[in-house]
Length: 338
Image 1 (spheres, rainbow, N blue to C red):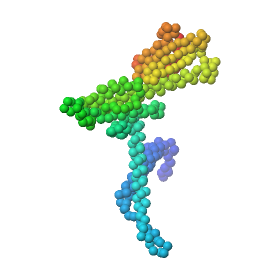
Image 2 (tube, helix red, strand yellow):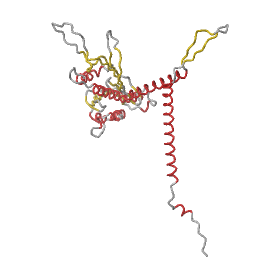
Image 3 (cartoon, rainbow, N blue to C red):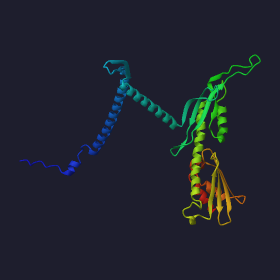
Image 4 (tube, rainbow, N blue to C red):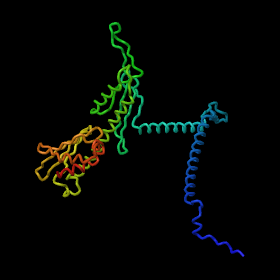
């Protein structure tokens, strides 16, 4: 007589090659997510198709109503009104088109460059091509800059036979008409225009001019933003603003000024225990925000150890980048002990 089969122990069941429950649950969640996404796309397509189909097939029927007179006869005046459904559908389509246009404009503005056409307000002024350049830092837009272009004047020079030639304009070449670029970048703009917007018949490269000018403006905005943060820290640590004046060292940073181009910063240290003896420093920055030159003087003599501390022990080439400004305030304070 054979013995009954022995049931499998829990340890034996766990060692079987059955499917992994966690893996199956993960696959189910992924498939559910894909199904929900497809359903949302299907609903969107259906609503779009319904709106377009209704606009295409909406009839131009009118509702005619007669206004009865007090004696019961109908007034020959008839009031006509367009189908309200058609009006609502048309308004919905217009709103959709407006939103798409707004989204497209927002996308262009996020790219930082927008081109548009405006009318020259001057007498007999024609169409102008406008270019808006926008820069941002820390998620905030700065002041936009504008460049307005007009067609290149190709009017021939007066001659004895034709002293008053007819005015003509180029259909392919443009020149800068007006702009809001800061005055300290006027040299850069004129140089780019001379190089990239030559007179006919030479080819122009407007895209390159706009890109190069935008790069100059972005670097300026970033330099100014970084230096403004340093200036804010200096202001916070002045004796009149410090929460614990007793912790202020005898020599402290009393002033930090930046030029409009954000290429030169002037620093002043004040020694409160030596009858107001001052140290003056100048920090010149390159276009990328790196250290181009540092000079510190006291009593008309340079303080070289202090200059080296301000520059810091950077790997070769790293002091030429914008990140050099990030720790500038700490290095300015650390250099005081020299």
